[in-house]
Image (cartoon, rainbow, N blue to C red):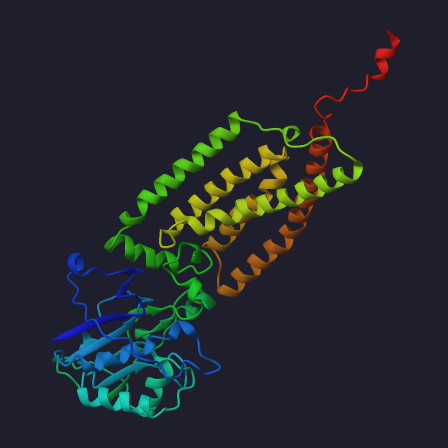
Length: 402
């Protein structure tokens, strides 16, 4: 019997969504969280606190082989041949240290107990996570032979190095915008690095172009039904806001009264600060309320719609010119188009194009901020300084002629 297991999720994870026992037929083995004795190390990363739970895979003695996977693996082809590998097999995406994002093991209670014993004795672990511990437990893997699956389907014994094609680091792709893996089948992509740029997050594309490939796999398997209700509700709310701002035009004169010059300056400065914070909130708020695992095309469309709707509220409330307030919105659209362009020859050219666009757009953004401040000052002078209730208005000079 063979087991394909996912880790680094509350249960097991595939394409960024948790697998359900009932709906997906997954057999979930529940375990007690293993205490991490390295959690007080200076270099310890809290997101790896429970990563030592991977060691429980050696207890699954009902299975002949277990393929252990992190959630950020994208399969391009079937990899059934991995179940023919030996007692322990892993990929060296680093020249000296193998990667525990995917490895093959033969379950053994003896090995599991020995690993727990090593933990209790304080075995040295450079990163305090599963990566450092398992690499230290199998220190000679670099000297082991490369895995080549027997054509007759027999299972191997011992330890083997897996070809790089079983853990193609996404950063290899971003350098040349194409794969150039010299050995083994190009079967599995892994996405190590910043946790907030994992491929299931909608904002990771087009920053990382392979995000669309991930979401295409998800579309074909799990779909996006769980998030669509929220997407439709948010879209309806944003469209309603845009419609309302076209019909209702509030005036700042209802908010201000004529007072001393000192009070006027305080009101001026306060409203300017409030207006700038409102513009900033209009661009930030939609980002955080969009379901974070939606398809990038849906996510960015909803973000742009939400930012436009909230900017419309700010424009009408503070009587600001529309174009300067929407310059950042246009800049974001331009950035997405520059990053998503498919015509770059390699990643270096793409990075230079993004840098060049940012360099050229920065002065435009600065001018728009100046225009916003000027427009806000004019709207305050035009609308805010109305006489207080009961205070007579001075007659205009032309009235004296009659």
